[in-house]
Length: 284
Length: 314
Image (cartoon, rainbow over all chains, first blue to last red; front, side, top):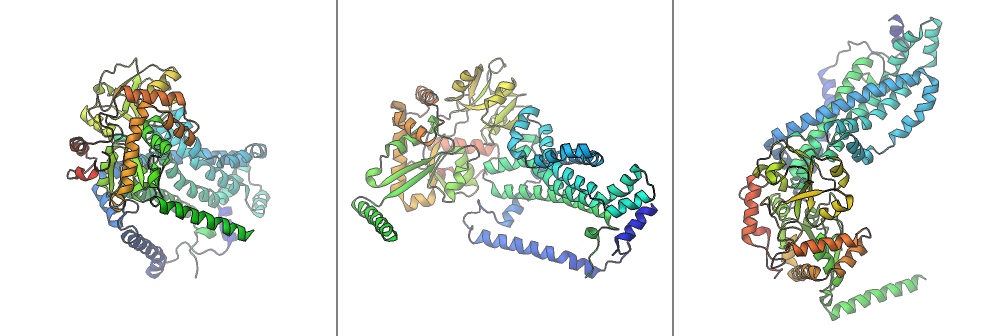
């Protein structure tokens, strides 16, 4: 404990956890993205009523999308729920397998040397292209969707975690060794905490990717009717040329991915907020 | 070098212009198909092979589609002047504001069917309950499901693959009467099938020719030339498919000539083109509108009378 504390101190440039955030600072933080959002929606509306005025089946107006969303709450909710479950399972699996593999590789040089090149290589496999085969192997069911989400989500976690676990600062390792800390202590109290920023960088990328993976899987299994997720709903809306509904579904899928991303970011910041640069409140 | 190029290109330009002045202004009509080159769009390939409107300066170009092709939005957006689709798609497009009009029927009786392994106890659509069904997201199967009150259906995406079907005895898969019985026989699978039109009572005009309201207004001469070339193309196809087959193979060397002949024979023997190729009836469009309204695929008040015209296909 004392070592971690002193470590945190050694990082320097640390603000006390209790720094007061004024309302003014809050506004300054929230206002810019809100203004951008309003501008984007305005630009979208402007294009949809000018260039696409008589072609709203190509670009619906914001109000048409809102209307489609409000007239199909059951459909959107059901799609959201199913895709959420599939993405969560794929993401969860990717965290467990990705993190464990990274830890094992970081502890054994031979294992790392044997497998790391393939971990990098596998990241470049176009999962979307092999997804139809995965569906043939595992069947037209949600299990196949979870596996596709898992395959898309695992590599950023594996790579970033391994990178983080292998990049512990030499001086800090020496400090632990000087204090004759055990291998376990060194791992639990130094290597793992020091790797957290990298691990969370990987998790943040994979959070969004797991939703993309779930939707790709749904595109291929196309389980329609009562048990289709957002990907299936998108296929059907597209076939019906219901562009307003399609946009609403894509927006819901985007929100889902964003929610995943935010959840990971907030969790990460909570874990590293006391010491890591990226999570510290910027001083102006 | 540059000068000679300029002279050559000038020559080409003037050459085209003088030829154009002699006949009508040369025009190209492009038709985007809803699938790869095959006999089921044979009328279009025959029109491309014969070019019957050449004397009026009109060249017909047929482009093959494939899985995921969206012919209706592309034609509505002006990427192609003409497209091929089914009557139910036309009504759904109009319900979403696409100014699409059907101008010539393809199949009077839709080719859509559902195949099953012959050892399954399926005699009618009512027996499909409890099966896994591979289908595209078009509304025909939603209608069948509602109309026959099917339960326990597991819808999966139709990929066109025979491998899935071979693997799974429970699977019922969409098919074309003119194609899959042939493919299944080659693959050594024993199948039976139900016709969506004859056994299911859902019969949208299949592989029809459509264009936009604006095109009809702006260039009715071109619309007539293309519609009549295609309607004649269908009639020619069942008499002699060699022109269509050659055009299809030229566009896609994967076309199997034997499969092409099998499909043409099936189209001809089954009378799928109807007694008057190209023609459509108000009654048929109304029935289809009502069926689609019954499954809430389109709004109740949709004006089906604007969705088609027989002006050009006679």
